[in-house]
Image: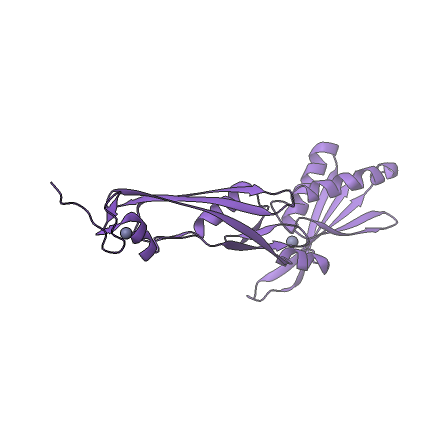
Length: 234
Ligand SMILES: [Zn+2]
Ligand SMILES: [Zn+2]
């Protein structure tokens, strides 16, 4: 049988003991779990996306929670687990309740803390580019013979197809629409988005499509850059 426990720091004889100290004194002396008071994250003031794990994403309570969990530092805790639950206050502020648990010398330990999540306004790379009319593609919306009337109706639909992809692809946006005698020219940030939107026009409205590309300089790593033009006839 074990002799009676006695904490040399506070004289406590009851409760769990870890490495010769009572649980309370042991936890005072050792920083087992570090949970920050405030966790900052970058948020784009234009598109509202947040930078989590190095990527701009649309944040929700789920990905913010795993971002918070990764900020918790744990030392020498066995079977450790961290859980964060993110909630939004009435003022739109985020906070998180963080729970960490594990064992040391088979003594179960629990840690709990309310953490403030604070956005730091930035402008993301994609929004910065789009604001200076960056575009990888131009979509030329044109009418089939006799279809001139359809053009004005089709324009917002086409723009909608491009913008619907914005949450996944930050460059998926129309940066400029210019009216031409023959129809509309749309500058689109992402070539891929333009391509998909054009395909949707073809499938949904039986549009005739054509694409072409011209060399548009060389990027920093020496790769040739092309500007794509997609013709959509409705
Ligand atoms: Zn003690
Ligand atoms: Zn942005």
